[in-house]
Length: 277
Image 1 (cartoon, rainbow, N blue to C red):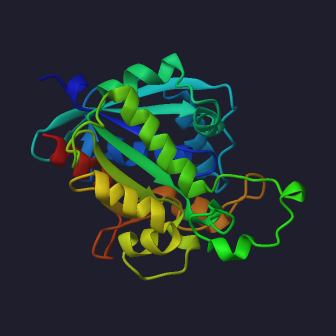
Image 2 (cartoon, rainbow, N blue to C red):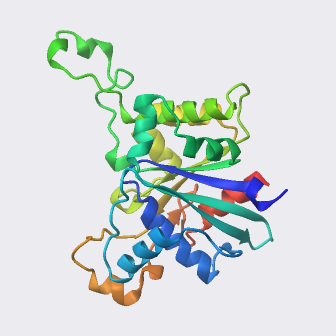
């Protein structure tokens, strides 16, 4: 089995921190002092190199244009010699929401969705809403509501569930439960903004209970981790002098399932790699 048969696909909506995590992870992989290191030449690193330059100056990276879709493929190997390809698509996160609204999977996505035996789903809890969904509000609260004056919107957790259902349908993987392939890791990004010491799975269940229940009912052993790729908020125009002086590689951490913090930003990828082989 080749490394390309053991690829890991990253999935995330707009504003979840894909590019920041990619830039920080790329630094770790090139340095090779974590559980994973680069195992050959990567492709299409331009978007991440630009992000690394911004972080080196203590500033946040720019937003990826909506129309962009470029596969960046990183050959990686862990400390035990297990090899894989990390497929890090550089795309505007709005494309994910478009998939849900149009019920159409772009051709650029289909091959990756079908071929990757492991998915890494980034979710930023701070930008999700659940209060206006019939699954999170008692039906009695709808009495007397002027429907003609209300815009009905699907909640974010409902949209995330529908997204996974569509991707699984394209893959043809919904006939058997619990799912063992693709392996799934839900990575709760911008963890430092949450202000909690709870375990990631507990926080996900508190904030997105229906989505959490869906994931745990469908996958045999889903992973839920926390991520703070930058460890502090950065501005795209005003540099953080201390951040630049210490270097972005000194910042960032992962919250493991038990609540412990690890400075090894490669650990979510390594867990998927270990579970997939």
